[in-house]
Image 1: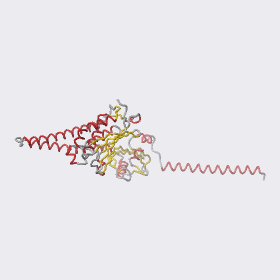
Image 2: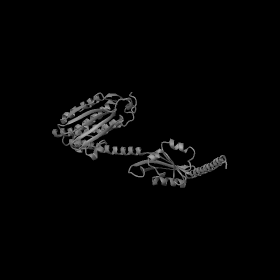
Image 3: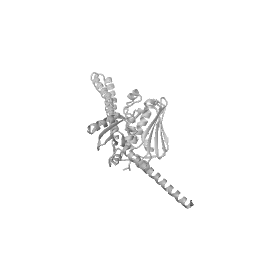
Image 4: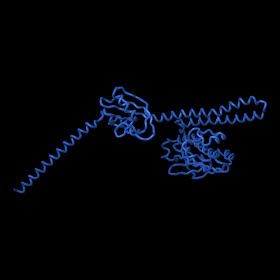
Length: 384
């Protein structure tokens, strides 16, 4: 047979086989798309955009409780795992709404995800979305619950703390009348009443200070401050206490550091740390105050050679009314609010405070504040 004819026949056969193969692939793809459409139907128009835009955690479920759309917040809260709802409480709400058709809303406390002990408090709402789907929305109320617990604890603590000086003053006042003819007893009772009155006044002042620190506008008048001046003022305010306890203070470190903030509040915070260090130090020891500038962060460390803090109590030292040594605090008139005030002041300035301690060796409290630079002050806003 002519070779040219053979070439033409080969080309024609190749085209026929290739066309058939392409047709088979196209048909298989069409069947796959159709099957995917049946297995994973799309949600109604616009729902995708709404779920992505809302701040609430959003989940869309089909008739079999399969998750067909989920927002990042719902995943972050641990509501969905492997395309299904994690918590039985949510599944019960969804089944009830699907059965009755009536939207439901409920406050729930749920475990955060399929494992772990963390709890999250949510306001959950479930309603029908068309004829085939259900929409679940959840708003995080964890912070509100936490603040309510703090408020209850604070009221309970303050009631307990105020009872002591008020009760003491009341008893001393009752004891004064029978002792009216004994000048020595009158002077002794009067002195104790003065001590309790000072303690009561100090608790009241520090409670007011804490309330002010929790206001949203505490740094509206932030100005450029020299850290050296803040340290000098705080040390100067503690000279009487240093002399009384026979404790020496040494300050040093890098000079010239600057921060933006409220000078009075920062001096108050550092004063409280130094006063605490002196209070828990033995006679004849030293307290150190050091300043360090490290990669845009100003660190002010207060170190003592005092009694130290047990490891199991380190996490509680900034709680209101917490005292490491209850007996020593009663003798010195401590309220247990000083470190809580320090923590609020530093956090309001965009910083944090850290503590290291070992019983018998002493403690170091380190304030960390953004240095005065454009990058560091961006979160605080421009000074007025």
